[in-house]
Length: 394
Ligand SMILES: [Zn+2]
Image 1 (cartoon, rainbow, N blue to C red):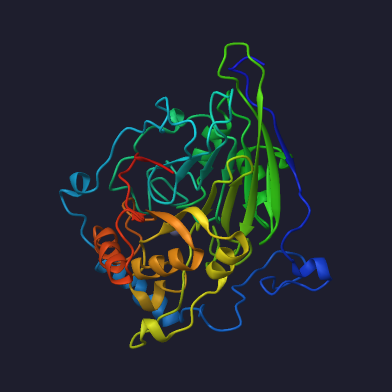
Image 2 (image 1 turned 180 degrees about the horizontal axis):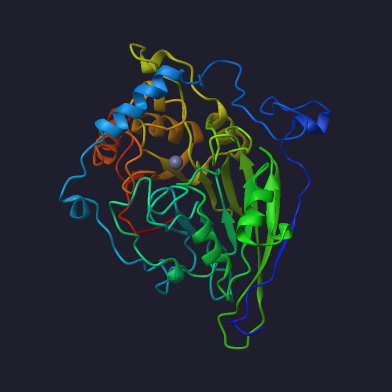
């Protein structure tokens, strides 16, 4: 195989490690019907409570009339660099994670001996200016993307947390799939594949739909580091795990497609990465004490089942007003609790610094994260806040 031809990628379903409701003939508690077209946040105590209509109305007025100002120096306050992707020599044994804005990370697993690179997984890639159905309406970026979508190296897996516009962006996905050196496979939670296949004009066979606790094995034949050398096989396992969120791309399809967090496990180096996507941790109403309301048990369960993680990619922004946003977006305090629940060694921040989606000041999430980490005894080099385009080695 020449080093320019795209790797061949084989996707298989491994023996089930985690129980699923359907395996016992019982409908799982996050499925609302038997046709897998409606879902819910299932935990038996109310870490998730739905907003009332009047809360949405006041949120609408808060975001349209009292939307936070974007500080004039925002671009110098949020550092940005051109990604190096961590490809400098001598770093082959490290895994690499590069923040590409909002919830997008490119993770490259360690390079197997003889290969030119490791397996690459990109999470929630969105490079459009606006996260909206229209490029003339909706929130526009207040920071730049650290590179162009065409400059992203060939990826092997594109993993999507859910179908909201700030996480699933058709133009970006089309550009990634059009890369001639990539044979990227797309991984989504239930009831996202049909829509994506049509929108991306990509066969369904390239889009893999998983339920919570389903897994897939990817065998990727990586290019050799030697010209005309033989391809080097690498194997990674992708696991779809629960998160606390909602979905919907139009006004009529709320709850119709499932949302998820994901785990990538490199079967050679055993590096394990957790990607939370978009998630809430608890629902806090006005006047309620954050520390006294029930929390979502999904993260402690994932920490237990996977035996902790080398790295967790965790959302820290879009959390105000708490009464409306807390059920589906983690605050910095929530993110620190999730980090501990997951038993992760390190965390990197995401889901901030890109679009104004909610009412907290745009520079508040990292400042608040530092305070919350200090309160919880988490050091700044355990829960890091990368620059846009920065690569973290682990
Ligand atoms: Zn989001």
